[in-house]
Every structure is written in C-alpha cells, then in structure tokens.
Image (cartoon, rainbow, N blue to C red):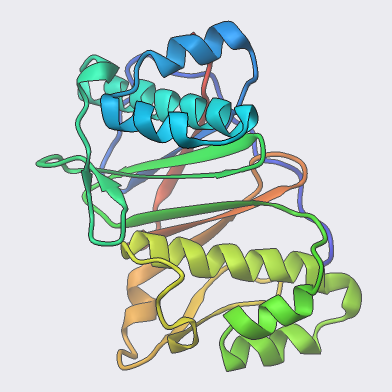
Length: 248
C-alpha cells in the first residue's frame, strides 16, 4: 500500500453535540484566511492566547493560531454549554491543555491549513495530523526518531511504500505520546508501533509493561486528500463521529 484511502466523510456541525461514553468525536477545521472570520475567532481568545498570537512573526501563523484556538473554544463551548470566552484551560507538565474539573478530554493537531480536533469523555486521547509530502533526508529522520524495530520494518518496505509508512509511523508515535501528555522529548525507542501501511494501526510494545499495548486503540484517519492522522485512545472499540466545523 503506497497511497492513502479516500478521505472520510465529515457530517454537518451539530449545535448541541451529544457525546456518549466510548465515543470519539472528530472535528475537521479548515484554517481559513477570511479576514472577517479570523477577526471573529480572534475575539474569543483570552489574554494569554492573544499574547501568543501577537508573538508570531508571520501573518499566516498568527491567522492559523487565531482560527484553531477560536474554533477550539467554539466547539468546546457547545459541549459545555458555555460562552467560548469563559472557558479556562489548565496546562499539564508537558504543555497539554486540559479542562480543569471536567471529564471532557480533547486534543487538537494541525498541519498547514487543516486542523483536526478529537473529543472524548473520561479517557486519555491524542491526535496527530500531518500533510503527506516529501521532505529532505526522510530516511535519516526515521533513523533518528523511530525505534530500532520500527527502523528495520521501515527499511524492509518497498521504496514506493516508505513515504506513507513514514507519516503513519510518525503520527502513530506522536498521537500516543500526546495522549499520555508527553512530547517528542520522551524515549522514542521505548515503544513500537506498526509501520506497515496496510494492516490496522497498533501499539505493539511498551518497554517494561507487556500489557500496556492491550489498553490502547490507535486509529488511522484520512481527514482530507493528502493528509493523514492517527487517533490514540486509552480503551478498546471506540465509536467515531465526524463533524465539519462551520465558521460563524
């Protein structure tokens, strides 16, 4: 397998989403450059977010930040029944934002002009999204960031399958780390994910805990043509619903 499957279908955006136990809601967000919509979403940011927004050097990065944070607040406000401006976040030790005192868990990832938000209830959740594109020294990057077992599997693949395998492996590893609230500073050789593009995504090994892979579900998602994502969820057999974020 060297090509992505067709993109998943994302339904219309519900005003009052209902999140059942064992469900994951995925929200696809186009990071629009429409000035009026950007301004409306920027108005939802709190002072700390506005400060972060202003520190970006380039307009496109400021705009994308305003859209993804404003859209995040808008969507979470629907689940919580609150004004998006009133939502307060806490930050975990590795910088992962959380909702204090709430069972709602979320994770947001973006790549170029697309973002993907995952929301669930009472379970650790990580999302990583990447645009599939060729990068210089891809095999060297894999050698630095993949585990020894992953490197062997990656190098055993036909050359035409390696580009997709690279991004699948990358998103699988990062989604699982994000679900655990840690980043790429973790020991990336301490766990293995499935590299081969064809079979379903899986966490295969975690050093020191043979049972840990059984506690997790990894799911490959194709939110749009040319992008690939992985959703990591602590649990088994989640049900998915997919929504398109409609800008105000």
